[in-house]
Amino acid sequence: MLQKRNIRWLIPAVCLCILCTSQARAGSIQDRISHTGNKINELEGELDRTDQQVHTYQQEQQLLESQISDGQAKISRISGELDNTLAQIKTKQEEISQTQVDLAHAQEECAQQYEQMKKRIRFMYENSMDTMLIQILESGSLTEALRRAEYFQSVVSYDRDKLEEYKATTKMIAQTKKQLVAEEEALHGLEQEQSAQLEQIDQVVGELKNSLRDKMAQIQNSQALRQKYEQELERQKAYEAELERQKAQEDLKRQEEIRRQKEELARQRELEEQRRQEEQQRQQQQASQQSESSSNETESSSGTEADTAKSACYTASAGDLELLSTIIFCEAGNQSYEGQLAVGSVIMNRVASSSFPNSISGVIYQGGQFSPVASGRFAQALASGEGSSCRAVAQDVLNGNRNVDCLYFRVNNGLIDGLVIGDHVFY
Image (spheres, rainbow, N blue to C red):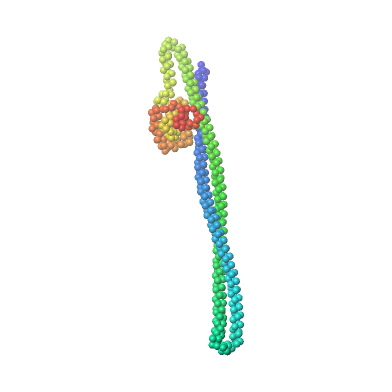
């Protein structure tokens, strides 16, 4: 008899162990989902930072390209100015050469005039003034005498004028040469200045081109890194979807296990009740069958209505209202009233179920059940009071307004059969 009693109690214990193992396995999957979600958030943050970095590099590239374009325009302009300066230097050199030729030619003419003047002076000196006077007086007429006198005077004036002209021409040519030489020196100075500017700008443009190559390499590296982040992000999202699918399967198995356990416990209670009735019949042979049935019915109802009484007798506090409204906000804050009410209904259905903790806080903080709790989002929302926006629907749930009788819900990805409300599927 003792051995049979032990076997009867062993079955519920084994079922309870299986249930705990299933919950632990579901918690492990939820932890991996939370970890993967955090990894996805980190990768998305890295993508944003990389995009911003690429944008900054591209702006710097455009600035460098603009500076290089300006530098090349300056090089082109100064090169043109330098070519013009060299052309002017060549022209000045040609003018100086021509001036030297003109000066030599003038000097040659002056030398010829000087030789002729010396001959005339020597003639007048050798013949003296008396001879010249005699030639004037021996002329046959006054007109001839005046002509001869004017001739001698014009010769003297011509020599004097040629001497002055020689001096003026020589001085002018010397001044012109001096001015041309000065202009040539100035042009050479301008040439050196322009050459130095050209060399300096060419050096700056070369440095800008090196910077541009480095910047383009940075952009290429950042884009390659971004592609790597995108690939890893896609892999993590695919992994997250697979974990969600596994979690949904585990939830379905767990729900089926709970149902099976309830059926097993109900059968055990029936067997226990049957044995107890048989024992009472042996001990109370004189008791009527009607009184035994009434007693058995009363005791059975106290066991089968435990979950219902549990739900009906639950009294929520202000803290429970805050917890419930916050978890509704975190899970369905962007959903309709029906979607938020369904999330709250799942929480209270778990409170009412013997397979979950019997308090709102116990259900919410149960390990591996709600992603916002695992990620810290729930704690932040609770501290900031964000859940106040869902306080009214939470109060409706506590007042007994339920629109689903499910124990689970997930983001609807088309892999789970159930009641779809908004973005979630309830099952």
